[in-house]
Length: 560
Image (cartoon, rainbow, N blue to C red; front, side, top):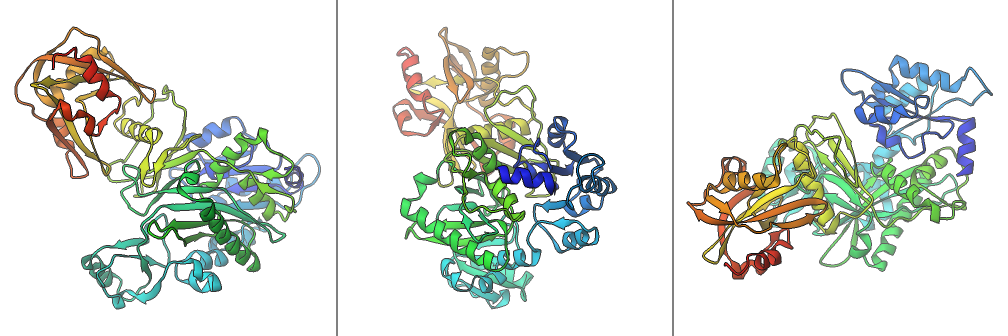
């Protein structure tokens, strides 16, 4: 956007943020655009190619935005940006943050920095669950039926409902009350605390990023399916963990999409009337029973998905009308700088996704083998606080099959997370054993991350092993059986880029007994059980990978 480029040359913007990826919505060679953040491994990779436009602060612990703004190196950097030693003079420096607070606003005022973000008081009023109701006015019609009560006055009527306190973050202030016991615990802990309660709506969530322009227009952004509560990425059912832009048209009708955009338009107009400029987002739920959409959340800030959405928009820019279409991040920045966006719209995208592994009690640290080949990118975080970001994975393709269910690409990301949690190379070959005896096949019956399926005994190849050794080792460890291998070629499967080899066994003896590793991992949420399954029932069960069924029956040479 030419007007934005010219404006930044005259009036530079410095984005100060705890996590650098939030600021990566513009190319870093854009003159007049600077970033200040913490010195993480990912941030240092970014800075390497752009040392003049990125300042990283290296302290023992990561600093939040307010702490960064007080750092002596940051103060000096901002002074030099606003008063360059060479070239023409510039206007006073503009500071941009991910989400402003009263502390940040007071500090910027004290330091005579121009904070571009709209006022935090308006953001809080629109975002917080109880003040939001009054703020919406007539737009309350978009909300589900609700009540506001002190917790001690909430009665159990036999129907589950959603309880929300005024403030929450990524699901932490939202509780699904499924029984009277849960309600009584809340009443005892927070008797005099106000809460918003509403019926639980069964159905998928959607979200999008919109921009209120200085001229009063509302640029409607791309709608994404909101990935929520999926294991192993989180252990909190209401935690938002990602977005998928490619599956929306499979889940919403054109009429529903039009209605969604009307909600966004009306909320945006309300924001403009209150003096808002720049980004806001909405979260909307689809009631699967009625097909109606309800407004659930208002995000008065730059959402975490904005940067990657803008990167996806930029990736497809070559086929667009560059004179009239811009990215979401460009529109956000241009609106905050009061540029005229009358002739612009946001670039449409119809594919791509990101998913976040949050810190859970089972996944404290991750370590990625740098030699891995993959068609997705990732960002590692140094966070340890429960439910904070641990790993962000970004893909140029969809990862969702339907509501609450990953497709094959998405399941590959689970394999990736599990492998790097265990310090293993994610896409190393897998070796397994096919045990067939008396027209039955031995399988591992699994319940994992809410899914029921079967798998063949086997595991990942270790360094120094050939794949046959891997299969034999894993077969013995997981079943306790004695066996030898048939003199035929193993079944080879390309499972989303991972080579898997399954060897037919013979001379099987002993009683199957689950290995120590699997027994030690056995929990109600991640269970292992060895079972003999009749071969004539093989087609009717969920055996993973799916294509192994036919090849087993064809490859056993009639010995079953």
